[in-house]
Length: 404
Image (tube, rainbow, N blue to C red; front, side):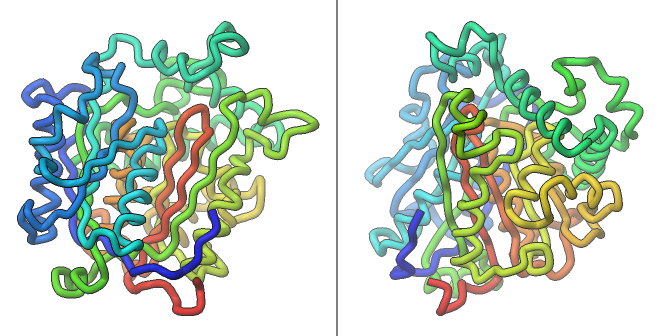
């Protein structure tokens, strides 16, 4: 996680997002990826030959039943004859891909890099069965863990520690769906109330159906480049000013108990990652210096521990700030103006969706979702059995010269 500071400044100058739906049967997988790339290139005012390398963000291929579909997508993303790298860290894949592309440019090896990802999760008849395969076949698969039951257990512990109620989680869903009404690409959206969330079918206590994200098909792409070209090509680039990640063991049992260094209820892994990201970006008080965040929230219970672990507020207090409206569009910190992962979840590309939405906020291109006066926007991604974490800061100017 240590960062030397001896690097070139990197910025996002183009973003591309397709619509996200349960199924997009009028497009093949590589065509979806190509649509996002075309949108990002137009947004950056670049032709494909300006791209030096391609980083491909792709989740487990089991979801689509096509082995290594990234190879199928090379021609469609104009990657032929260029360096091509595929990454996969579950839900953190998009965050990992962005950070890999950043390294390409910051190192001076490339000047302009395309990051693209796509997913078609509903082509698997049982995504949760496939996600059960994350866990060790000898120790944990027989417990019937999947991403829903695993995070429900962590949520139960969080509620026990801090007294959080199901209604407070329901308010997170209401806010997300309401924000998504302004997002033409969002999968789920609507003007719902807490009662609607509470009355949706029970899935795994404390989760109801509306507490859980959809399975989305769609694609996302970013064009990242050096400061030199960013200044030439874009009136307001989104500079990558802080970047960090951390991982933990796949074994849930080793992340909880008297000898564990973390508590899976608190997303404690995010603390060192956020601390390093903020150090690079010169952030000393995130709650007042960051205007908006696009955090990875496939479940309503992911908001509070993430915001607390990253230092926006003390442990156990985010729920009360949420009740007071602090995380609304017009609050002190606009959380997921796009609706977030609760409304749109193409697993292999969702980290890129979060990053694209954060970049658009900095660039002033979020239209009806735009938060006023955004100078710093934070984006996160989490993957595996809440095992991989990325934290990235995007800003309207490069990081401080003394922050490296």
